[in-house]
Image 1 (cartoon, rainbow, N blue to C red):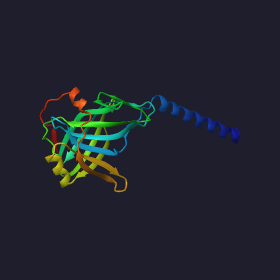
Image 2 (image 1 turned 90 degrees about the vertical axis):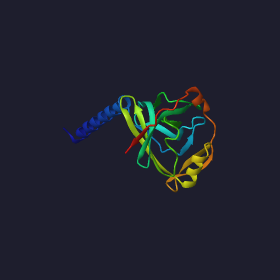
Image 3 (image 1 turned 120 degrees about the vertical axis):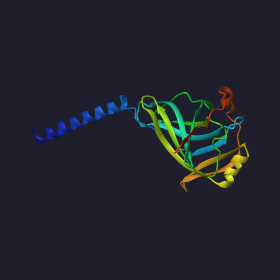
Length: 212
């Protein structure tokens, strides 16, 4: 066999391999669910019951062409050795906040506002000063719970005092590219998305807290 025939066969084999890999990527590989770093984080309390709420703005995307179906999103908020479960999830849909009931995420991504409430007594978690670590989890169809992100931020003494003593205050945190951390200010709470609570009323239940 001549050298040029060997090169031709080699290129043919490589071409077949690339075609097979591309077919697998497009037809079978669903990829992994990922999220971008939230550029905006908000801590507040819902009007009325005063449930602690954590609100983030981010983009979810899949690394595979087929995409992923998300059943649920929830947070673990860590502070001073305790972990608090924020599993009452809502997200924007066409500009309107609705209860989280599944979300398809494709390779081009989907940007939404995600709202999470702590389903427990309103005083289970006070936004006291200190460092907070927030782990973001997704329940993916066929895969179960997967951690898809983590953020950290600090609340200083003045911010904590306002959040605790004045119910209608919220802390807006924005990611600073220069400082590589979240910086924010306390301001009056915006009374938007009240229909979310009116449509899905809740009753206080026992506090949800995990030590350790």
